[in-house]
Length: 254
Image 1 (cartoon, helix red, strand yellow):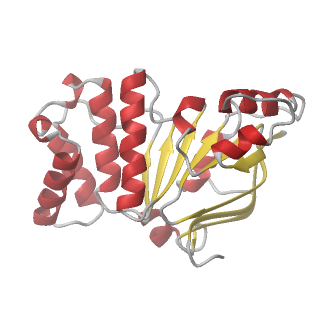
Image 2 (cartoon, rainbow, N blue to C red):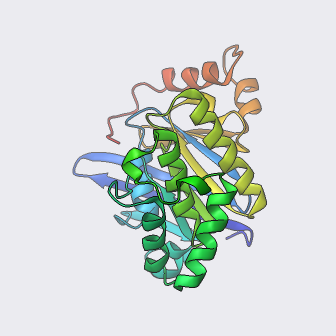
């Protein structure tokens, strides 16, 4: 394992019955890298995130987070990860502060340290005025920001964003991407950003194209366009070409 690796997947496979959800997937993300996992619905992105967050074990291969094997050393591996899931997981009837404080206590932070970190993160995102607001009354964009703040409170080394912009308008999507991109550099943190929206990955350090459980390509956004088998003017063109050329590689669910 590269000493700079924050997240490493080596020949990871997962099968559900007759369905091969992931097939020998290899991913290596270094500290401070912002890597986008781009794939259509059914590509296997959610299955991959389920393995990364310890919800299920892979059938084959290994997953290491900051050098810790997630199967053999789950506590140090998972404690190094922050996650924003596709489905909202905030308690809608608690205040913003209540949600964030509960997360801090789950991670063993003292009440004093929790208060300091919550105030710092709310200030970083310009949400101080929402501290005592009930989450149910927040806009979709602000709820996502609160979920991101929650994921950062225990200061993870790896941040997983699982289709985190679902339901947001284009401006809110762009704002969230830029926030995470800047955090990646500022906090020496690796990011794996899962999405099916091509526009979200334009500024990624690398793009991994996942299709029906297999990695079709891995490169910078610019190189993906330049290396297309047919003339491609945009990243979306290059992505659609890859998918089109691999339509019949089998069936898999998300």
